[in-house]
Length: 125
Image (cartoon, rainbow, N blue to C red; front, side, top):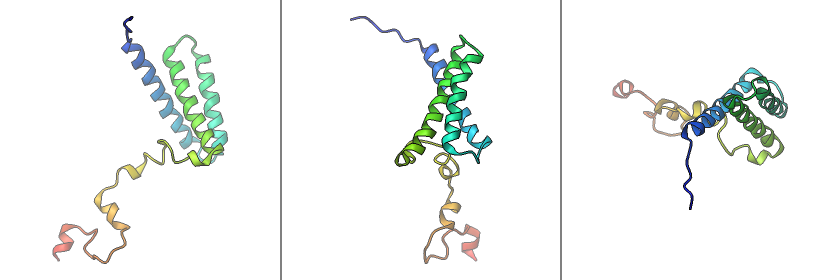
């Protein structure tokens, strides 16, 4: 059985390029917030396809383009099949909701406990 040799540098470049592409595609949502999400996804795919044409024979640029294509197709698929919209990580999933402190958690709580959501200093009064 032949041994498989992994080229970790090549794998790292590919992973980094894909990551940069996906993150870069996320900025498209912030640059064009009022654009139809399906059209915005298709635009990302077009940018991802065109990016390697600007710098041919550059693997890193090609991988960035692949990441942009993947993010754009994710947007398009979420519009075509709305049931898939909650699956995976997107800007809404990794936004402020991921970093909620105790104060934010307790501010919207419906409870009879009047001390909930108050600072220690206020509780002593």
